[in-house]
Image 1 (cartoon, rainbow, N blue to C red):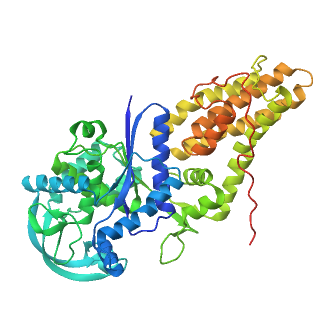
Image 2 (tube, rainbow, N blue to C red; image 1 turned 45 degrees about the horizontal axis):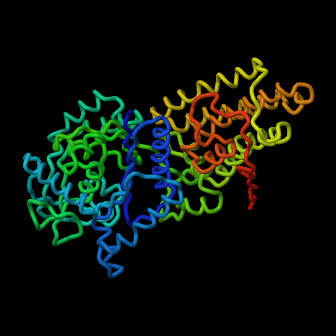
Image 3 (cartoon, rainbow, N blue to C red; image 1 turned 135 degrees about the vertical axis):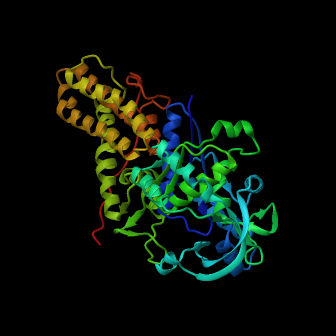
Length: 500
C-alpha cells in the first residue's frame, strides 16, 4: 500500500471563503478520494492561519481578544467544507498548542544550528502583507499600508541554502510543478537570496508565537504558518506518525504563494535537516470575466451561493473540469450552466435515464445478462477496461481535468452506442441481444460512476446504489445480473438559462 499525503494552504482566518479557497480544498479532496479508491493510505490536511498583525488589528476593532476573534471566524471555513462534501483527515489551527510547541522547537533547533541571528533593519514595511518590502515593490504601488520601520529583529540565514535549493530543483524535475513555475523559481534564485526576517517585536505586535530564545519577540506569521505541514503529522512529537507521512506527496498552493513555499519553506526544512516535499504544485487563479477576484472589485464568488442554488456535486464537477491545473480559469454563470447541461444533464444523467428506463420496460427492472455479443460491444468493453489505469496515471500526474474528460468520453461513447444499437428496436425480434446491449451500457455507466465518485461523491454513489453496485470497484464485469434497479428521479434536471 502506498501513502498519499496532500495539503492545502492554511487559509487566513480573516478571509471570507470564496471560490478560490473552495477550488483548492475540493481539489485536495478529489485527489484524496481517488487515491483511497485505488487502495492508497491517505492523509489530507487543511486548516487556518490565525496569527499576525491583521488578525490583531481586526480583534482590536471588535474589542475582543485575538483568540476570541479567531474562534468566531474559524467556523465559516469548517461549515463550508462540510457543505462542499470535503472529508479532510485533520484541520489545524495555528493557535493550537500542538502547533505552537513544534514551531518553538523548530525555531530553537534552527537557532542552535547558527541559522538565526539578530540585526537592526530599516526598510519599508507593508502592514497588509505583514512583511518588509523592497524599494522596487514599494514603487510598484501594489502594496497597501506601507510605512518606514527601523527596528532590531531576528533573521533566518536563508541565503546559506540558496545553492543547495537550486541543486535540488535541478535534480528533481517534479519538485515544483508545473514546469513554468519551476522555471520562475529558478529565475528568482539567479539573484542573491537575502536572509528572512522571522520576528516581530512584541512592543509593536504581540499576537504570535513567542521566540523561545527571546521573550520580547514573536515569530513572523509566515514562518509559523508553513510549519503546520509538519506539526500536524507529528514532527518532533510522534516519530512513528511523522515517518509514515513525511515528506508530503503534494503541497497544493495558489501561484501567488509560490515563493514562500518553494524558497522560504524549502530552506527552513534544509536547516531543520528534514526532507523536502515531493511536489509543490501551484495552480492558477479563478478569474471573473478575465479579472482576478478581489473584495475591492466586489466580484468574489461565494461557493455557498452556487451550492444552495445548484447542488454541491455539480459545483465540484465544474470547478474540477474547467481548470487545467497550472493555468487560470474564467468563471461565468453562463459557462457553469452550459457545462452542467452538456456534461451532467445531457450526457451522464441522460445515460442513467436511458438504461434504467429501457431495463424497466424490457426486463422488468432487472439487469439482464450479456448473452449475445457483437463487435460493437467489444469497442465499449475495451474502452472501459483501459479507463481505470488511464485515470490512475492522470491523477498521479495531477491531470484531474484530463481524468474527468477521459471518463466523460466513455459516457459519450456509450450514449452513441445505445443510439446506434437501438435496443428498443432489437428487443422486438431478439430480446437476449437487447439485454446484452443494455448490460454493456449499464456496466460502462457503473464504471464511469465509480471513477467520477471522487469528484461527485453524492450523485455517483446514488447511481451505484440505483444499480445495486454500491460495493463494486474498478474492474469490468462487476455489475450483477438479475439485480432489480431502484427507482430514481432525474439525476441532473436541465437548467434553463435566464437571459436577463
